[in-house]
Image (cartoon, rainbow, N blue to C red; front, top):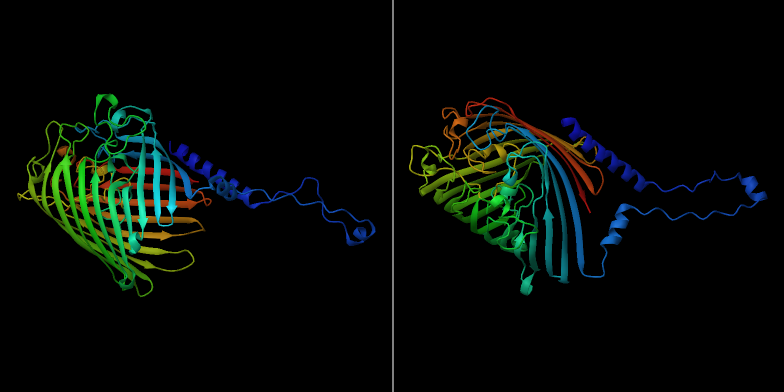
Length: 521
């Protein structure tokens, strides 16, 4: 199986290299020979053969195809990704009472295609749209949506995953206004990055309005954002193909676990290169989808988050960032599974007061050598719920439910403990080494020691997966190889594994392999 994945990646790499070579070479006319000696040329003049025009390169062809007689730009990309993992979702290969206990291995291809366009009626105004689709081929029994315990091709819906209007310098003000479906990135994306975690990396948008005010003289930007995000893919805009009625389940596909609204104020100041300062306030309101079998992790909540971030480059070789946040409010978890959840106060189905905090930090040494060597150390703390209080101490990463540091653990291994991508109850620290061995290639190695803040998992729907007496999650290892074959073609090969500790009942190693190629037009 792994050989097949490597053959696919290497085969596409060879094709890309051949294409690149062909683009850089010029054709040699058939039958030509070296120039005659000077004496012969003088005695018998030879008519010069006109050189043929150089072959058109892919970049030239693409530029001509995309050139339209309108104030319009457009493009497309295609990503082919294979993912294989074992025990990462089921948390072990032994019998389990959970929904994923009988399917320990997953092996599937994801074919994501996107096409986008931007129309510019004026220099300051643009209308932007992007269409995306991602069918998936399951080589082993699936644990996902309508393909639970089945293999074969899953023809998912198509969706408009970007649809907005952007106005720069409205009324001659130093601001940018973007209204509609868009992707939002703030700081290190610790609490942002994906508004649609339930569909993986298929989409990541937020339906929102954003105003960015740029105070250039003060080296400061101010972002004010309003968010209205619905769980169902066709709530705002119709999808291409069914997204809410497959298999008799009205919630066959969801973008996120509940309907969400929010307001954000984010201020970033870069007056001091060694100490960039950010401050933020985030309000998030969750509304559970009641009686929805596919929404077993929904909640009702009002979450207020205050936080700040400092980052910069000091002493030429040292780069750092440190971010912290405190949360308060109230939350009620909704479960639609027989047996509900274990005993912690936050999992009894009642509203509880929030009292949570988190810290995320990183320091890096930049060697600044020919290989671009970098060595970094991270420390992250996300509080977990203390079962001995009546409050809820679990930190909520809000719209930061994306693979920030691990495709396997940060996403899949939290499903039975919280929900997809909802990392919490976590202490994480360890080094990463990164190097560029050749032009266009990057390789990195990571080790993290993982612990739990609380021995008892906050929301676990399968209590038997956890010992309830240990807090060592395990030893986490990751290696990533990235290579840009050409301007338009890139590839990635990733391996991850976790050697579980006494926090888990099973000691079976969790592993994950991902291979992908992406073509951008």
